[in-house]
Amino acid sequence: MQRTRFGGSEAMPRTPTDADPRSVVSQSKIDEDTRLKVMWSGYAFAKDFREERGHAYMLEDQLFTGRQAVPQPGTCIHCHASVYVPYKKAGGGDLIAGFEKFNQMPYPDAAKLVKHPVGCIDCHDSQTMQLRVTRPGFIEGIRAYKASQGVPDYDVNKMATRQEMRSFVCGQCHVEYYFKGKEKRLTYPWAKGLKVDQIYDYYQEIEFRTGSTPTPALRRSKRSTRNSRCGTRERTAAPASPAPTATCRISASAR
Ligand code: HEC
Ligand code: HEC
Ligand code: HEC
Image 1 (tube, protein in one colour):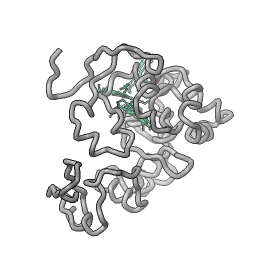
Image 2 (cartoon, protein in one colour; image 1 turned 90 degrees about the vertical axis):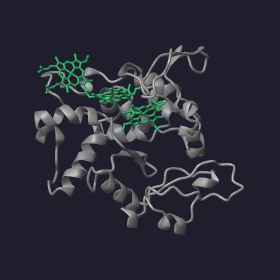
Image 3 (cartoon, rainbow, N blue to C red; image 1 turned 180 degrees about the vertical axis):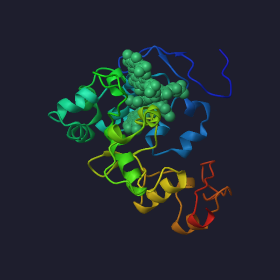
Image 4 (cartoon, rainbow, N blue to C red; image 1 turned 60 degrees about the vertical axis):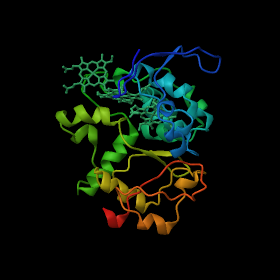
């Protein structure tokens, strides 16, 4: 089989082990471009990052990814399993309360409470087949976004148009996100808007950090960050550094 340069999820055979029973996986992106391992060193993605596959695999690929070597929170389950019923059960009938409980569990405990990858009821009302949004991350994220547009108390399932719902059901999971605070609350960074610059401003304001890195090339002083220009690739490591990477961060002045 010959891979094209456009990626995709061909089935790569693998020998199952007790720890990972999958006999087929998709191409590893970090083996294909080993610079990613350096760039992400100190970050779980340096351990395993593959081409994504179809929805039927979402739960097993999350269960067995090498990124589980770093302890992950129950929050991860939100987008990789049919959680509507398990959330409601955990919350005593309250979807959001169940979401909050799941987020704070260690991943292996949360994973025991789900059985299936995304199912019909995650996007459809079981009585009417109407489209519905079931994911708390989206319900709260879109409410924060609408508030920034001057629309208070937005309720996606009551106020969205049919056309919007056709995108929103996918946007429940196919989005940028982070885990907020020690409660690990799944949060979509939309409170300032959906554009990448607005999301960047939001992350700047909350001083967001995603882990720390031991890679010298990625450690930067405040000063060099401020002086960098977007689009200009500059080497910031000491000359003796083993890391062959250069990085560019967007500075406020360059935007
Ligand atoms: C419950 C969360 C969830 C929802 C809702 C969801 N997806 Fe996904 N989707 C995923 C996950 C997780 C994967 C990756 C699974 C894997 O690699 O094992 C995925 C994979 C995909 C892929 C394969 C990507 C590739 O590169 O091969 C496509 C296409 C896709 N989704 C489209 C959609 C569309 C269109 C919708 C709305 C109709 C949607 N998804 C709704 C979670 C979701
Ligand atoms: C907000 C929804 C969401 C959350 C939360 C989420 N994922 Fe995903 N995940 C996705 C989607 C969507 C895809 C497929 C499309 C893509 O990668 O762009 C995916 C793909 C994956 C894949 C397959 C590709 C790869 O990266 O090797 C793995 C494994 C995975 N996620 C693990 C995790 C783990 C571990 C967590 C918790 C740290 C997590 N996911 C949390 C939405 C989510
Ligand atoms: C990721 C979200 C998602 C999942 C999961 C999903 N659907 Fe849908 N479904 C949609 C969207 C989007 C439409 C188009 C709705 C529209 O036209 O407004 C749709 C349309 C439909 C329709 C046509 C409804 C009509 O009024 O014409 C049927 C029937 C349907 N889905 C059944 C299912 C069944 C059965 C499952 C489970 C096997 C399922 N869907 C899972 C998103 C989803």
